[in-house]
Length: 428
Image (cartoon, rainbow, N blue to C red):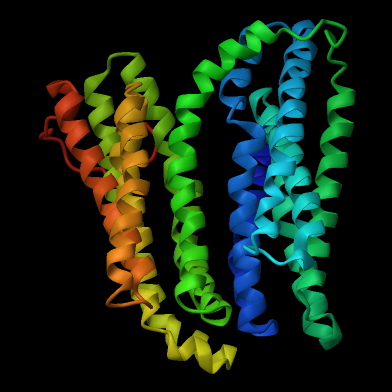
């Protein structure tokens, strides 16, 4: 096997194993931990995931493009500038995040884990993005595997053998060690690159220019991620931490669809959409868009059928009555991910054309519609209120992006071609 093909195979295999590890972790946590602990784990991971955007401000979207434009001897200065911004954000944001514990949204027992994991996740995430930007995809996959894959396998294996380790602190400790190992590897590789330019003074004007680019996209990201964070807190408030464990389990199963679509469909097709639009190749744009639509429909349909078939035996295997009692939540969480997945088709079609504004507006609108609809549903169906609110929000996003695509896309890029529909074509 040629070296490049081998590297590509290892890269795909690592990402596949990482996805599978994350997918299986939720099953084993549901088996080994009590529902309340799983609910708390869901709150903690959602809060860390949201707080990451406050520490990073999505500034990497600007830095990455700038790095690709500059020579290696200038990279150190750019990274130093981003580091300076991150330091300011750390000083401002980290103390504010203490309000999460002061207000009782999360218990103080996990405060130490929260701040340690937040910093480690942010640093490893930014290192991973940098490695991808400078074409170190294989090492980026190894970093991702350490921070999201291998520790989950080790922790669940230890829990399987030793019952005294079936504790949330063991899970968070494994996560911390995995992220720390990923950080050390990323730093080691960064030193090997012999990047220069670190002596340059921090360019606050350049940072300000980057913030003007990053902040509009950040607002949209915070809105859509806010929906996926508020939902868990709201659900826990309407019900209790134990029932939240069932919601976290069902959302974890359903969300696997998004991970598989990201890795198996979106990542392979949307670069072709961007290239086709850049080259003004309308025929190829339509070809890729049809492939994106029908592969998304095909994978989503297959996933939904399989998930509905296996949910009963899975819950019986878990042997936790609470999950069986709240099984009615699962079709709703599945519908949420199906609507979200379908919304990614017009999303990438708009993104490929540089039409970011409707994407930003739809994401902000989703949060604004989610809050009143969930509040209304909570008066009549408290158990289903949050998933119903999410369904309404993601249906709005799907509709908004479809209308924007039809209105803003030139006719030659969206007209129906007489060629056969390429169900399985992911590349040209």
